[in-house]
Image (cartoon, rainbow, N blue to C red; front, side):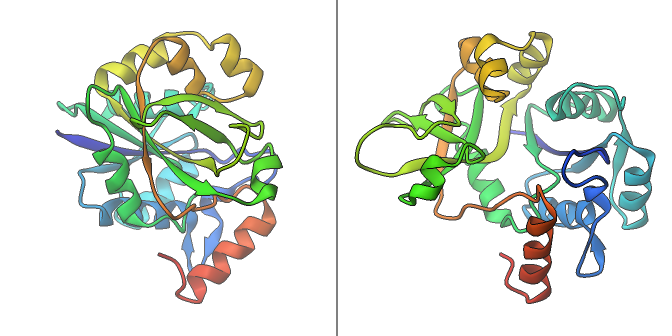
Length: 239
């Protein structure tokens, strides 16, 4: 495998505008994400930036960034644009979200390892028995078969019955072919209904495999999330 880690980022955000440049213990969040990606040792790292300010911040810290069309519809489209800009023969593309500054590098490694047995895409899930997680539509749940294949993703409290829900960790590892096919396809009905991009891949007949991890790194989606990340990293509690 010849992986490439791509971190999509843009300044526009409904609840937390400008979050890629939000300061976390003296560094912009996007710079911390680049450092996490580099620490995996998986392969080269590039930021797919929707804004020139992000490119400037990443390059000032010694990282690599490419400016992508700000009107691209999704982070995955931004990842694909960056892949084309970088070039090379990368056959595995890691889509690492730009707002997970407390994710451990080891989790990225585990996500890449889950891309096996003919999978088109790999991701991660984390079990939870908390009723708050089951009921929260902002916690995306995965329905996973015994062999690790993801059967569905939903915001509802599924699966029904006793046992944990499998919280989806928002990291994706694509084969190059799968990424190319994915971005070429229009949004699917279930994707639009659940507002979950990965459902497009399932409706296209792609195989998604989910690795199971204990940790559940929370993304920064609100001012409260940002303050929590600052406390964790400032207190040296981050993974």
